[in-house]
Length: 236
Image 1 (cartoon, rainbow, N blue to C red):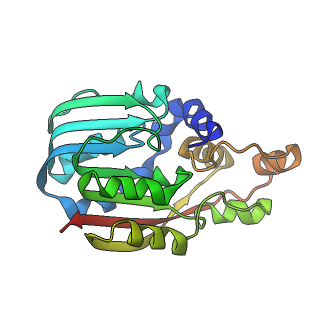
Image 2: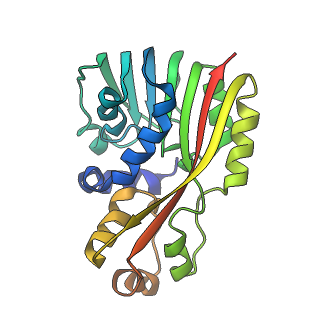
Image 3: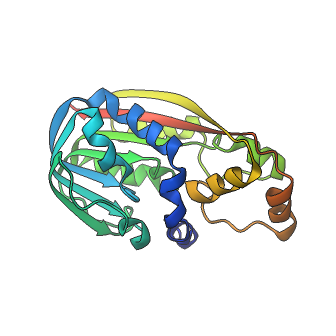
């Protein structure tokens, strides 16, 4: 994961939790097929400020050891350290592409793995260390309205590439994979700009002055859309 992405998430930590309604929806859609149930060891990659852990009680999911891993210490500072449905919670500040993974019953990656520089290698490592995996990965179709207005190219992978990587990396797993699009509507420019800042999907890239000014003052702000690949895998 690049330094610009690390800086982006650290900088937006205070606003991220306030503007994560889409993230919460994605988490519920991702984990619903796994509920109800008990998982002895859960690893949450890119755990952020704790949206996954907070969602577990309503989903009927219980955990022995919950390990949250994130590259941003600012995000982890806002992550819960206890849960009624987890026997223990441990947080680690690390880059998930460089971290060593202990064997896990379930690995979750909810809107984080799109920033992996080598997604195939990361998924292959996960396949060797987990019994189940639940991933939601944003594609280049996310924020398409913004990229169309700015005439910029998304830094994310396309859906076809993501699906191919997942299918090949988890060959020994029973696989369930689908694509969903989410739309978010805004009544004013300020909330639109706050969502862009808080979502993290811009990835920390710096826009030229002219485009940054156009984004702030002239970008159409009524709707943002997000596309994610959902993947559930179970070792057979």
